[in-house]
Image 1: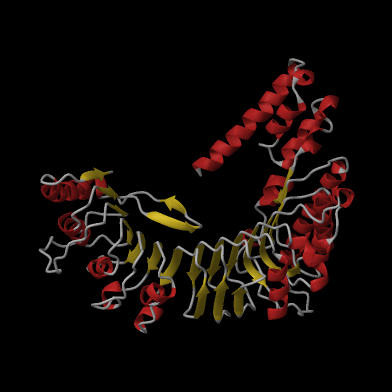
Image 2: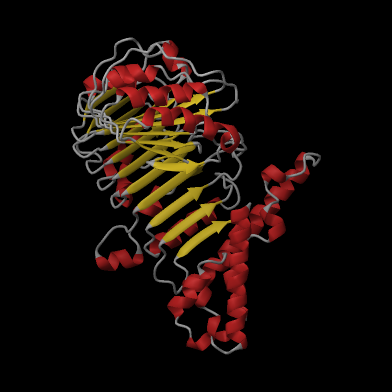
Length: 514
């Protein structure tokens, strides 16, 4: 809410600045580059409004290189929030249908009117469309035209999210002809065609980044060259239709370095192998339920993030040094902990392992684990309801003799605690561990127990960080930050400080408590 208030305040200040310039006859003195920068912080509707301030400004609003077409930028305030999710529940089906139809007509007509002003624009850097548009429905053909317009202007990034409210459109197959909830088919033929400028320059495409959500992507062999310049592609709830279309897609991505699939349909086998995607460095596969196997034969792949059911993996990726995986209660109950029991053999050169655990790990970790011979960095997100059971970390550390950094990101939902106990965990010496970070700590006994154990047994430890703010992993190495629990400053911090300082005072470990 605070960010929204600041955003609207900033926009108001910009509009006042423009009006002030007009009052003082300063518009003619401002370079177009500065004017365009000012206008880029406004919505399209607000930018268009500035054209009435002066005849000098009539075409300044058309110099924007980022086209963000969504409800906030295009529709009136009352129409922005008059979406599917906010329609009155007492309205009849007919009235709901008419309200949605009216809103769609207003959006499409406003976009068409705005784009008609941009005929002289030579370059569009980004096209972003966030609006509910379905196959066979009003606006579908217009969206094709908008993409075509951007391609002709040498667009570098296309971002389409064609469902504003989750769960409102059922998944529809490629050949669904009922028109009710069918997903929009991304026009690969348009993306694959040569732009007017590109034709003169002898190149095929300027497109570098493609992000699609809630649509169908089914490229044919004849339209593959539109994807050859892509370096980044993210697909969210996209129907890939068949293995043949998947093969066509990967075959065309010769320069792709970053690839992500999230909850995509009709993808049974993912094969990154010669000659496909040989420049790929990062791969993320998240909850693609149809998936049966992943084959990775890649000389450049560095990072793999996988979350989903147990599937078959085949690795021939000598540079793959970082792996993220989720350990769920269902897979744990069957002892099928792929990242723990298979990776030491499958990827012996692995250096960073990232585990997200939503199960009772004490019953999962066996007394003896395979050894990770080169693991340097272990990151664990551990979710618990009542009390964190962290005794399994002792077993994990024994399996990682070369570990230098350990991160424990804890999330405990209920504040139930007990007295600190003397642990009976086996004593052993870990010589390489130099840094430990524990976040999301509440001051519970189990958290203090593992911290004390690490202080006693990690003989090379140099620094321990204690942070009460829980971390939320966003993917691709990015994190979000939450607030500390209410009792931390009043109870938890003092309890942690008193117990850990008793151990630190006799060592050279730098203890940092936030």
